[in-house]
Amino acid sequence: MHTEMARFPGNSSNAPLPSLPFWCIVRRLPNSQNIAIGVFSSRAAAEEQMHFLAKMSPNTTYDVVFDFGLH
Image (cartoon, rainbow, N blue to C red):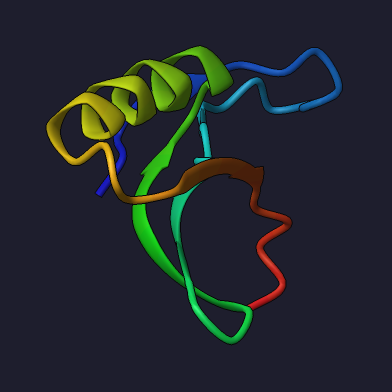
């Protein structure tokens, strides 16, 4: 579970709110299928991990995508 906390100016109680992960690494599969590999709170962290994964398995396609949280 991601535990990083953030404070938002619009929050009247100024209580800490969870910083939700928004970026996912997905592995592309045949037939337009995807597998989520990891979830990150910053795009930079997701891209860094994706580059590492690409070096470890160069024949696999990965992408960083924004997770809208609609699941």
